[in-house]
Amino acid sequence: MILAGEATRSIQRTADGRGARILDQRLLPWEIRWVELRDADTAARAIREMWTRGAPMIGATAAYGLAMALAVDASDDGLAAAYAMLVETRPTAVNLRWALDRVREAVAPLDPADRAAAAFARADAICDEDVALCRAIGEHGQALLRELAVAKGGAPLNLLTHCNAGWLATVDYGTATAPIYLAHDAGIALHVWVDETRPRNQGALLTAFELANHGVPHTVIADNAGGLLMARGQVDAVIVGTDRVTANGDVCNKIGTYLKALAAADNAVPFYVALPYTTFDPVTADGASIPIEDRDPDELRLLTGPTGDGMATVRVTDSPAYNPAFDVTPARLVAGYITERGVLSRL
Ligand code: MRU
Image (cartoon, rainbow, N blue to C red; front, top):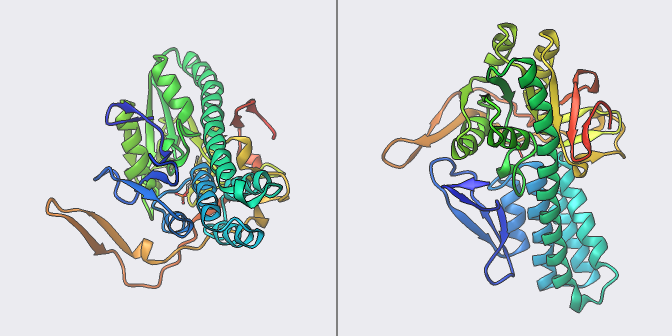
């Protein structure tokens, strides 16, 4: 990832090796502030309150959180309690459970005295693997975008994405954004329509920030604008990330994704989903069985932004509000899954 012109990763160990450093995504794009997580409770809070977010990044943060817990109490009871606390922080992204399982299985057979170091090492490995997975997704996705660009005779490709499935949501590259970054770097002309992504505005605040940092042409649109643009032929493909893909190929992602898939189907625009194997949940049969997170209605009622004189929060409505954070796109609406193994029509 490129942040202020420098290549870095969105989660790293702290200098002393006993904690993890993340970007506080609640402040972006207005302020770039790194936060040090030094205990499991703070790591859990960072996930729950969305200081950090995005399926692979939640997993990486939880993995380090479990390691931090083991540095305090490495007993079997300590391991079980920290696992239980972290796995409940957010219910929808399956990467959270996947990452915690990987750390737990690595440390459970060990003497408690060796568990914390082994857990930190496993968390590091999860991060390294995530970078490799996203890079591979990017390479396969880039080939796909090249084909679409050739079919357009070299005219700039117009892509549409929803929410943030970029490097802020992973350790590097992102999932949906990896093909975009690699294609842009390879000289394929493209432009990205960035869904604002109400209520938390991950598109307008985070994806637009990432694309700007990388120099990728982009335009933020209201969530409701995508259908019109597709009907007018102004979208060549939709690429989104996902929090969980079930055994039958249903795709759970940020609320509003399903509407984009419907509009894409009605306008013969291919709808692609980018994911690493860590987001595939073969145990859950279909999307209807995924726990959908309901978040605080105030995320909908309040808007916060800079005034030129600090940050201000304004009220959009006082009415009762309902804030489901994710929806499910049926597998039949997915043109392809961009994975580290290639672009697949079925998982
Ligand atoms: O609520 P968020 O911001 O964590 O939701 C994130 C998404 O919906 C992403 O698209 C998904 O996690 C994939 S991240 C590579």
